[in-house]
Image (cartoon, rainbow, N blue to C red; front, side, top):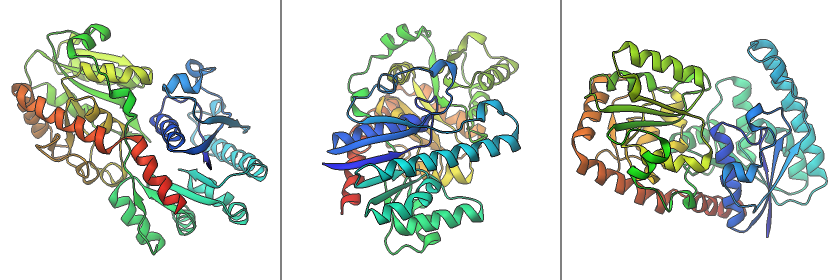
Length: 396
């Protein structure tokens, strides 16, 4: 059995999507025959998450081991102070790297895998000495010269896995790689979506109105200080009939409050603004089942247009609900307009409103798009299928 070590300098559990992605991938790799250990960081967690069992929180099987490496975590003490936060993060990262170096010295491992180029950069000399194969899962291309130099160094010495085709192309050009990186989009944990409640049962469980036409958004409302376009969704819904409601599942609360004020300022009914806040991962399919339409209104930025492979997109599809998304190259790798979802020009509020109106008026179209998306998600975009491809590349 292949011994695989996943290095992730993150809090465990965390309210952010990367924690769910990492944990579900570790489970999938274990189910595909790898002996997996996940090394997170013993960082100070949010009060609501302290003491939570990682496996129970994410609803995964105990097929892999979790260890938290000791780190110097001063981030909670300087939160909001930019310069001090940068120093604190650097110290935390340095201590994580040192702990990982010491740990790797004393374990038998055949594959080391990580999303963090800096961590791999620091460990590569030791890993090469121990003849360990290394997988680097790239999620973006660094903007700064130092970050690009580190990524180039790592990419030339590792098996590279990229989330999108454009990201794979950019990394190959930047590092002058002889072979193209493996493109592996994000996906779903199939078991979470095998049995879904019908819309009425889901509405009863969530407490949402049975008669509303609900357009929903799942996930954090901001990523890396970047807006995700939900404000545009609020404006678009203002032109639709009164029975239309907006449902937000995620956070943070202050962003949701600002969106609610915008909703009310447009003369919309307060009772039609539905906010669930952060919900447990195992409840996500229930809330998605309560939607009529799943929206992903990302704006055009380099990250969203070329490098993003959002978990929400694949979970939207697996829920069997119609998907509407801004027409970005990364999204268009998955969503085919009129086949398994509808696309509209990013940032165009009138086009978004017209597309939502079309879905509101055509139940048969919603049904057809939702069915096609669900079939594709369950056939092509599962973590197990992804893990199988990645492990095959790493073992080759």
